[in-house]
Image 1 (spheres, rainbow, N blue to C red):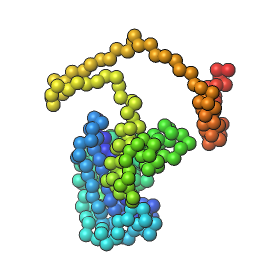
Image 2: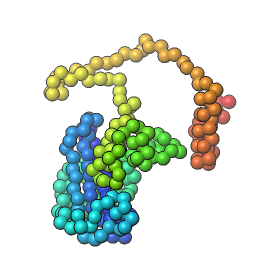
Image 3: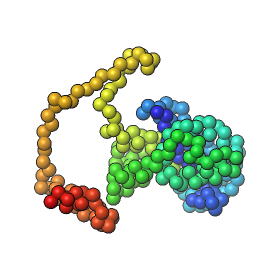
Length: 238
């Protein structure tokens, strides 16, 4: 499986209002392993960044003056992303800019170029409801070192997102482990782990843990308008 973690930096918040992409960072993950086959470009947006945007990414207008325009790297980007599974944090924002830039260079819309698009912000909200799920918050929660992120940067943020995703999905690995004996996949062997005879102990929650669980459900009730699944399950089982 070829996955690409993608991030952009822009001159502002609205592609429809004329804001442009100034940086694209892509990190490749192949079968859950970082390959180093990354893509990183700075772009001349042919306009200045808004002051608020400069505070976020710190990329000066002067620095971008001699960088290539999007049209000059569009085909390279399309070739790199073609057919891959794309992962973006807050995907609608980046896709709106990519669609705008691609349409202006005669290319198809971004979703039609790739195999799939996953919004990791949506994933995080489902895994950690009611909590902050910014990239920085996820790095802290999942113990990903983001100490070098004083400003936003497309390549750095894509690298951090890849680490966050690996940690978020680590528990989904199957209990089928491949023992590769060579670089040739045809010579690799698989070991099946049989857990049918394993008896797991049942450890009941303490009163303190139950009270904490109930407090979390109460918070979820407030944010979901009383639609918490756990609450409805308790009622149906009563």
